[in-house]
Image (cartoon, rainbow, N blue to C red; front, side, top):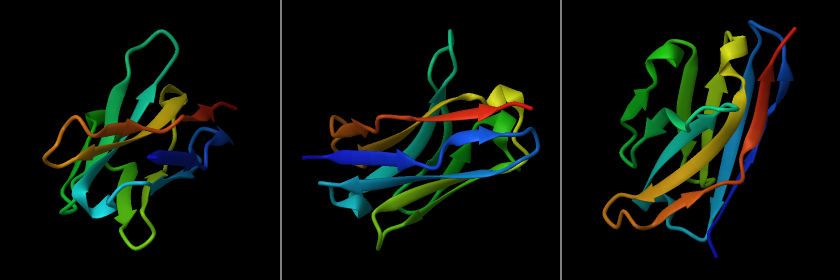
Length: 118
């Protein structure tokens, strides 16, 4: 059974930082490209950051220079370090794992709420 479990969300003031974690089980982690998505109320889910199995990264323009995605293959974990947070970063953040070849092997976590507010 595949599970992606996110943690690290919460309430933070503008300018603050959070680090999200996503622990994967039930998959061969090194075969998967990993991503962080977010969805704000009334908006579509959007890709925030991704990291391929070979550690190539890509970021949403609005988070470049503020967010950093990383992975620890030994721990089956992907992280999202979020600095200089803004109110517009408020959303539910979801972890995604997609097999690098078999694209139907596409899994999601349950989401973690991030709220940026004073």
